[in-house]
Figure 1 (cartoon, rainbow, N blue to C red):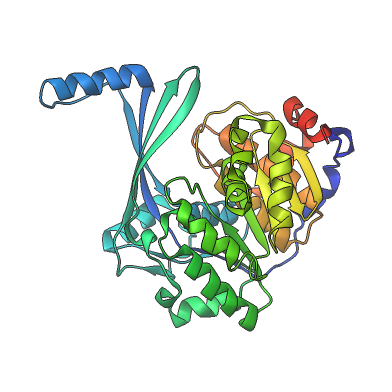
Figure 2: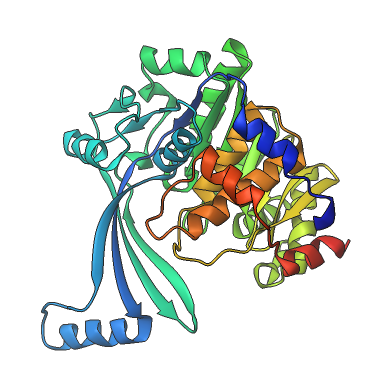
Length: 371
């Protein structure tokens, strides 16, 4: 789709006066995220090496802060900013709940937070390496590692039954993620007409989670939408391919991502949502609709995928056209990464952004024209 054909007026109209929809449900992870900003990665490593060589010590000269984390909680937070009333179902402990209360918006629904587990936490080191910003995460998965269908209470299942969309995210942390998707979405298909949505997360530390997913719920029609970035798309392509070597090196070749997405979609009974640095797309079998990303000054390194997913969920619940959903998702992601305080954009923020001049990724536009 050519950039000159993108019409934002229709989207602005819906954002200004959205129709009432059923509440979405998002699960199953909440993390306490501890950020450490260190500047140069090389200097950071030199400092650590110095401490190790002297038997320990304290490394100064960095900035640290704590934020709410976890894909489920952040997607729900972004949905809240867009005017919805999401229900987030997670397991932590009493201390985790107290931190979530302190870190989340006061309007956040905490009635589905279980406190009979163990808090999940991540230390996220942000550094500059070879001219770009990198984010290095060290995680203790806590109860996010084992959240299953049996953990859902009657109160949770009522929210699921009344939901317009049920999203399971961050499966890469969950040892029983495939089983959760299979059992939960089987229940959804029997009990409601809700849209089903998953985001796998980076599977590089747990590639074994993919085969049960693609051979089970993704083949059985239990999942309506699968959201992936280019890395996750390549992993799915490797899992589905008879010749994994065909995917070698694809991650560094943006011109191959579209083909990989189409190949993945044709082997799954689900629609693929692909978000990359240059464009986003919805792929169903051999149908590919893509929209270039929007140029923004990057102030925030991580979290754009959660905002992108939230905007897609909002658009799906509003039954928007595919190109409008993708434009909305790209706009909210651009607003988020350019926010100095990592604020999730509101509908009003998004309307103001879309009403101004929009600069689309030239690389994305060119990549979408390749085929």
